[in-house]
Amino acid sequence: MPEPLQLSADRARERAEVAKQRPIVLDVQSLTKSYGQVVAANEVSFHVHEGSFTGLVGPNGAGKTTTLSMITGLNRPTSGKVFVRETDVWGGDTTAKRVIGTLPDRLRLFDRLTGSQLLHYSGVLHGLDRRTIATRSHELAAAFGLELALDRLVSDYSSGMQKKIMLACAMIHAPQLLVLDEPYEGIDPVSAANVTEILEKYVAGGGSVLMSSHSLEFIQRVCDHVIVIVGGDVVAGGTVAEVSAGTTLEKRFAELVDKSGGGLEWLHGLSDSV
Figure 1: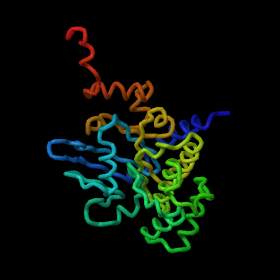
Figure 2 (figure 1 turned 135 degrees about the vertical axis):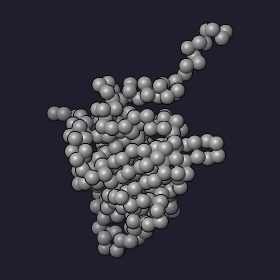
Figure 3 (figure 1 turned 45 degrees about the horizontal axis):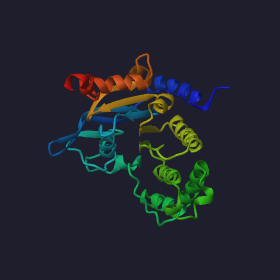
């Protein structure tokens, strides 16, 4: 019997072909963010199709979190545009933000609330009625294995449980696009498989996921598309097969980082400097 991750890889390859025929749900156009002389993101451009599970990868400090925060409306870009379903995220209309679910980097939780209260609060913020919130909270808690923890303060949750309750909060309003910054960080392997199953069902139903991760092997097995960002620049993008170019994503990533000046070239001449 095939392993679960192998099944995910097979589904990802099938999704890659289907997604190409579907509408674009996220269109990122020349996004740039500068902090004085420091350019954190440099004219970043890519798009995500409906029903796609897309990974965003890059070295530490490459600009992944900056890019994701500009997409979700948390960090105003210096220049560039972000369209979700053809609506400008930064155009003054809140329509685009309403269809995005986000899990930001460095969780900032209202951790003196219980899990149930946090889900309720998230639902209220998105304009859901009490009955809908109660129903969806119960279903999400069951899906993420949090039923027995809903009456506990979120401050008492493990880091993995906190990540899962925040992911549940991001999904309670049935968004069309999920933007997740390191959603698997701090989650044990069993919980990671559970989260993957939930996200794959979400994508199969027409939702779209844009997710950053440091695990290239995991991205290769789960995602159908991948974007590589180095030093604030997008250096590759496309289906996982296209970007991998006949090798593993990890090896291809190493090549791309090295070509972008991310290697340790100075070490090659170390003996000459002694």
